Length: 140
Image 1 (cartoon, rainbow, N blue to C red):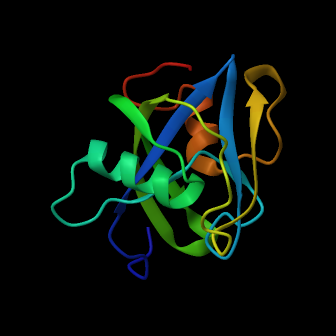
Image 2 (tube, one colour):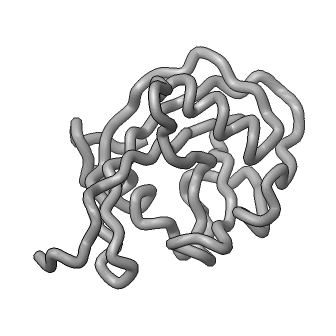
């Protein structure tokens, strides 16, 4: 692998479901622009994955979640962008309310989607998770 690539970063993705649907946002102004992903973002210094999940969901959707739990880890190399992420997948319990685009610079659309009819294309880490290319191997 090229030495031009930076060290891996840690991201946190958050699965939130309601009535057999998952909350997704269309990414913009960042790597993976135009793809669909769950709320999430970079793990801040000193922050736990649970704290990051709650913060990112609030910042991106305006929603509050609770009962946050670990789900899986994906190893995600964005070769064309020269980025490498370890994504910690968390699951949070939806507590009510309507999601909004609280960070419109980072996302252009938001909505609930049935698992069997997800919008395309999916963000690489979410694609890895759904394909079971994660630790431990599983599917939502």
